[in-house]
Length: 56
Image (cartoon, rainbow, N blue to C red; front, side):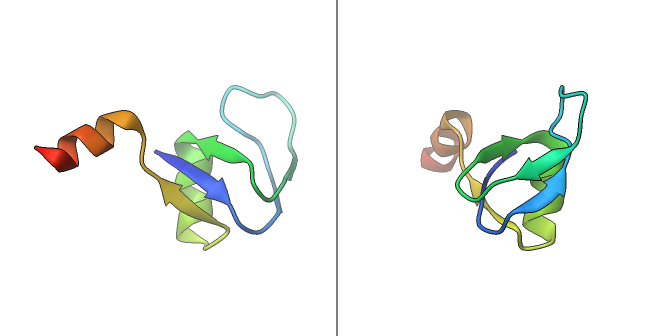
């Protein structure tokens, strides 16, 4: 899953060692994206694979 951040929040992106402030406009992925969408800090972004599945 990918998501575009709509409200900055502290977090640690997947595959990064340190936590940081995730800024508005960043595109994040993985577990962090799922949590951000659930908490309404980001909106889901469909990737190419998901768009192709929707068309079929």
